[in-house]
Image 1 (cartoon, rainbow, N blue to C red):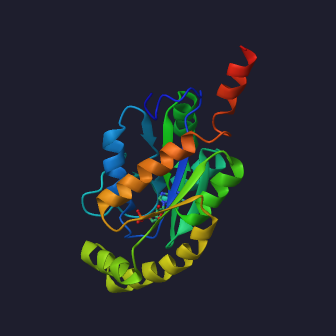
Image 2 (image 1 turned 180 degrees about the vertical axis):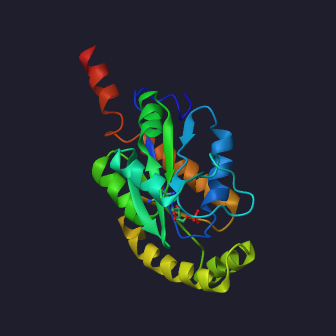
Image 3 (image 1 turned 60 degrees about the horizontal axis):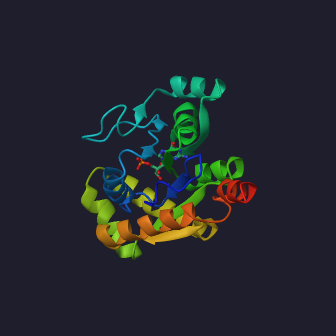
Length: 210
Ligand code: 5GP
């Protein structure tokens, strides 16, 4: 039986956080390529400007502040947060739809949003991606070359604050190399799918048919 055919009906909600520049996106892209049919990656809405190469509807839904505030008013987001002066939020309907269809859902969100999701949906599994060191994180942020010096400094300060919250997550993945991080992520998700809590309905069903 593959890890995606465990007999529970609802998909697994996977909340992933980690400081900007840690390389979550690269690891997730690989994971999603492997599991294209069974995993839904939630595309967030944001009021920040697109970076070079980012496409509307693929990387984010790029919206104006008033469009975002309307989404909040209409209860259209599962959670939202302000980060680095911009709004970021998870559109609610597609997440619920995918979970109900039995697909796993990945939310790549920052720590405040993650906390809100876990309060609402405690059955979710939370994963924090750490850099191997602070020096390496700085190197990755500078090499990305998409932000000015002041923004890089602001993001590094934010990274330290975010990493202090890593203690609250269920699992830590260290992104030293993409391959090792991917391997850790696969293991973590497979483990989360097989907890007794997640398999409660299955256990009860087997006992009921005894
Ligand atoms: P970036 O601007 O680098 O794409 O993202 C900045 C931070 O916002 C990252 O930590 C990213 O995970 C987080 N983020 C992206 N989408 C969402 C969202 O829908 N909600 C929340 N709370 N954070 C998000």
